[in-house]
Amino acid sequence: MSRSYAQEQTIKIGFLGPLSGGMEVMGRPLLTGAEIAVNQINKAGGVNGMKLELVPRDDKGTGKDAVTGARDLFASGVNLLCGNISTASVLGVSPLLSEANATLISCSAVADSLTHEDFTPNYFRICENAYTKYRAQARLFAERHPDMTNWTGVVTDAANGRSIWTAFEHGLREFYPALANKEVSITDPVVTKVGASDFKQQIVRLMSSPAQCFLNTTNGADAILFFSQAASLGLDSKFPLVTDAGSGWGVPLALKDKIPQSILTGVFWYYEAYDHLEMGRELYKDYVDATGKEFPDDFVELSHAAVYAYANAIKATGNTDTQQIVKAMEGMKFQTAKGEREFRKEDHQCIGDVTFLTLDRADNERGWKVGEFIRVNGRDSMEPPSPGKAIDFSKI
Image (cartoon, rainbow, N blue to C red; front, side, top):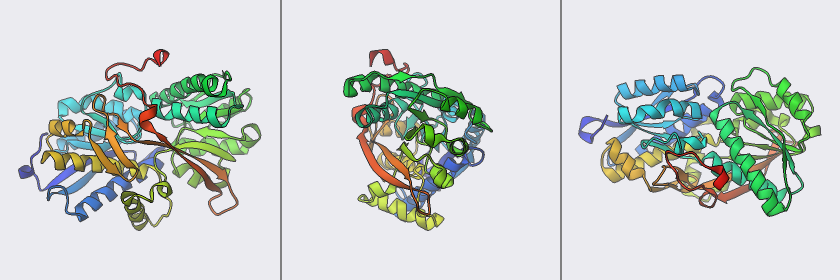
């Protein structure tokens, strides 16, 4: 799969993401971000004089379809891949990378195992992991809502859902005593399948719990259905404030005034917070030009950053040889629409801003408004690297 410029007329970058199914609401913006990055780089003259070409495949958010798509890309001579929203799709593809002599930058799969016990050296992650993001989110609640001490969750029965809940619960148990001088009471989370057709049973259980607040880990179409059904069952009367793992802007844009009355949610990118950066302004402008929409989903930025990471590595190495690209990206710092990012050398985990914001219901066309934007230094929230070994939460 190694490539030199003499062998090709364009540099092909494979895109694997959910372009159909329940995660399409996130996958389509992800594809748009990659397309914008490719167009921007080509308009500026390409990489070392070579044009980029994006080759997309639909992984439907599943491991099985991700493997099929990846094998098709490998057979087409594509060795540089990006995308992959779901942890399941990454777990399907990552064991193939070494044999295929290919590399993958995943965009929003957050399960800790991907850069720990399931780590493979040709894999990189452009977003923060569950440990970094959801312990930081738990800390925000200990600092801002010290009286909210009874917790539970709605957790998907999948690697990412379990990883998110483990990190968040660990953060609650550490930061409430340390920062609020209070212990927390945590009720076992309500577990649901990915792609569930109905959440009423889980919502009833949630509403009858003693919890004051809960963390939602459903996303995409699941989150839209969950919050829509919860609104009709009186979610606001039970939970005046909800915290969300970060199901993407597509969810509030679809729900409008059916969102909970107040949410603190994780986001990967909020364009207004980064309009002081040229790359942030250009991404927003090109998104509006490409889609006609004025509110870009945060997944747009992740794939945009992944393509630029490859462009920087190709520029540095002078070719697309997989092992040289891997070596170039280890420890690499590069500019993105969200500011500077860095791939940690030891485990290929990205280091950058970890961001959250509040959404409040409002009497406007959208049905909600952005309240406060919160930025956390990801470097300060990260666990020590341990590629090949699981995080030992008992020692942290």
